[in-house]
Length: 322
Image (cartoon, rainbow, N blue to C red):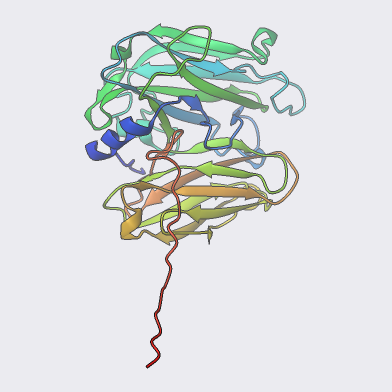
């Protein structure tokens, strides 16, 4: 099984200074919707395992009730992908307590073993539910102490698993971690992350998606993995010392990977993995990144330290005429 990379306390101190919004996908990512298909759908539609896990971090100092809201949770409305007729059931399960994050299976790329570890706080299954088409469904109120306290994160962690338990249609949705039941109001200092990202690409040429993995201080190389780009998108890596480094681009229903070295300047900083669309078509894809130990690296909805800015290296040479 693939191990997951657990961030150090130093990283989390930095995160607390820069994390303010809990819309998932985040505003910096330029992703409009997450995507999960019913488990009977062919993987060629863009979902490799019909399950997606997100973790939400609530800072230790925050003690008021929280709410995790799901936009358009049902499968059968304006934003969803029809495959024949709508017959899909989508289950959302919220976990906290011991093991919700710390159990290694919870942090696997694939939904295997005890990935549903921890205490089940709430569960809701949706099919064709018109009352939630283009609307929000809210889990809560939730006591922040119900999350698993993770010292490295400086807060309590909740796990939300979305699974297509029946059918073959696609569900487009998004999340918000809120202090209110009926409106989206941010939890200051919170963040959200995933280890494997399933989402919809923009539909038009030259639009760009941004994924933000944080690179720890002992990472010397990474492998970026992507699935089902359909040869109509191009992966590029940016950082403080990388500018338009090409990554591998997958075709239909296949994985591809590319390996990249990590320089000293890139450690303890965020990378910007950009996916540029090169064709006009809606397309659903999956992506993850591993380090040299085959440990998956988290993508943060709100990039730690902000999006990276490439630092140009200028070679200034003086000439002296005698």
